[in-house]
Image (tube, rainbow, N blue to C red; front, top):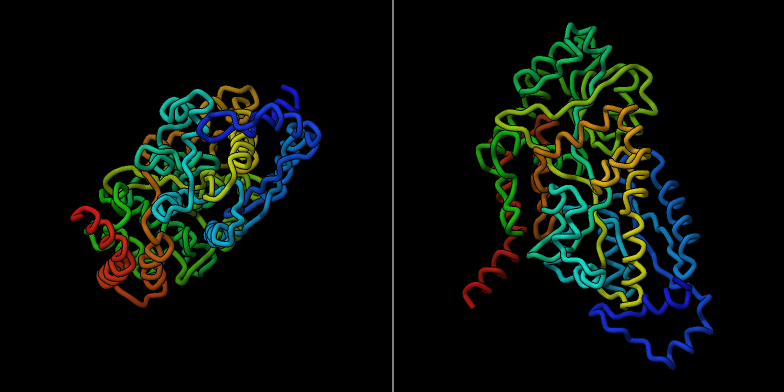
Amino acid sequence: MTEITRRTALKTTVGGALAVTAAAAVTRTAFAADPIEIDLFFPVPVQGKLADKMKELIDRFNTEHADIKATAVYTGSYDDTSLKTRAAIKAGKPPAAVIMSANFVREYMINGDVDPWDPLIEKDGKTAATYFDNFWPALKSNAVIDSKVYGIPYQNSTPLMYYSVDAFKDAGLDPDKPPETWADWVDAAKKLTKADGSRWGIMFPGTYDYCGWITSALVMQNGGQYYNHDYGGEVYYNAPSSLGALTLLDTLVNKAKVMPPGVSDANACTSAFFAGRLGMMLLSTGSLSFVRDNMKSPYKVAFLPKAMRNAAPIGGASLILPKGNTPERQAAAWMLINWLVSPEIAGEWSRFTGYFSPRKAAYDLPDMQKFMTDHPDAKIALDQLKFAVPWFDTFNTVAVRKAMEDQVQAIFSGKVTPADAVAAAQKAAEELLRPYVEQTALKVVG
């Protein structure tokens, strides 16, 4: 395809009708060397050198697509990225695409801040169903809402249990038999913890976002539902399954004392793990490469221990199309997105970061097959996908998420009982969700 032809294709409207007349095409020829400029907002929510790698990928895309000039804009954490995206949309200068936390996609749809990808998918001669056949089925739940595609899976994860082989052996535990149940987990953590404070049994980040992600996993492992995935205005923070999950956390920190009190971040967890001061930690699949590069003694990864069932919330991010872009910018963004999620590039990003590739075909490529053979720890996340559940997505996502996270953090500091925590979290969440609940109720009545 010539550059002029490519530019003409980019000018195609979202509905599929060619909007370039012969006269306009002649005019465009004179400017064919001027690329369409688009920007991609991207976060770096886990440890490692992801920002540099993303810029490298975008440079390669630009080299291969002379008619498009994409710019990667680093926007901080997932929460920061959402704030900056909303501000850009409000200012009338939306980015062409955003790598957005999967748990924000529904809220963007509710608020009318995102366009569906369906017209661009259909323009390529596919349906949403056939397009998503290329991705792992578990990723669809946080990407397709009301039968429309609002997110293209990009960097995806589940929480994993990382554990030190040396610490297990020192504590008399078999490193080939990691704990599978909560009871075994608490018992192993007790054996790993040293009374002199030189080693803790278990840690995981209690910071915002991470805290809610892990807590939701514990609730669902305890047989419950953390929220209503089919409706953006309902959470189950005070359900028995949630009380059981918070009771486990209270036990780990305040009763068994196998987890340090207070709120630890990911850096504190990995620093203790690398230094031999931690036996087990819960972290994202996206931290695999960072741990692999920095852990000098043997380690392994395993499923999260379960109470009543295996469950692992899908984390990570999807690519969204913010409201307010021109058809030309949308078409250019679509070309960038399809390049980023191609099996070759998605596989490369997976190998570099530790996120599993959302494209199934990436694992059929020779480079990926060799990588999986050389790094069997990367296979655990794929195995855990059979137990994957959607990640939290509601109206007013961050505030509703923090209603529970604040209470979990209070438990970590010994300031509240699990029973009081779940009651307070539910009350706060219901107040935050009230506008959406009332709005949807009126729609039903009307």
